Image 1 (cartoon, rainbow, N blue to C red):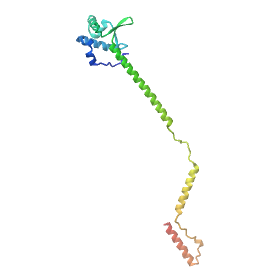
Image 2: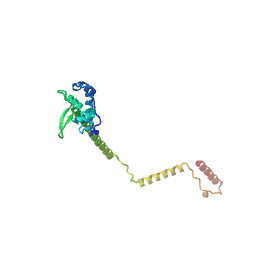
Image 3: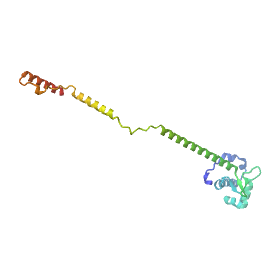
Image 4: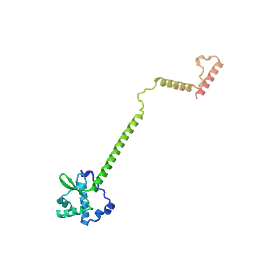
Length: 199
């Protein structure tokens, strides 16, 4: 349980200005902080420790009698640093300061968890919106055969007309009267003109 709250906030200005701690001796300052740290680290609620002088003497490295005197100083009238509470038929020292910190940390964790849940919902909603508005191309649509044939036919006709443009076809040889010199000359002239057009 204690590992779930690893950090313990400490505010020096608040501690030094607190009249309840200003009166403590050097030994009592050390005992106070050691007790707070063991409460935070070892107890289930992070804010209590058994009122057992032998156990307290163990964490303070003193005998039980000295531990009892230190606790009595913590419980001085109008200067109480720890409240004594009953739990499971045993007495415990309880720190109100640590309890407040536990509440703050739990509230912060709940707020962060809620932010995480809201962020997850928003991301999923955006993903659904993107997938619903995306138009996939229809790869199964076949090309229009008629339009393809028409384009091919038009291209062939245009190519044929361009290749024939400007050509002058010579008069067939079998239509030339080779006995007539004028007809032969005309046929040769037509053939020569056709060759010039091809060049």
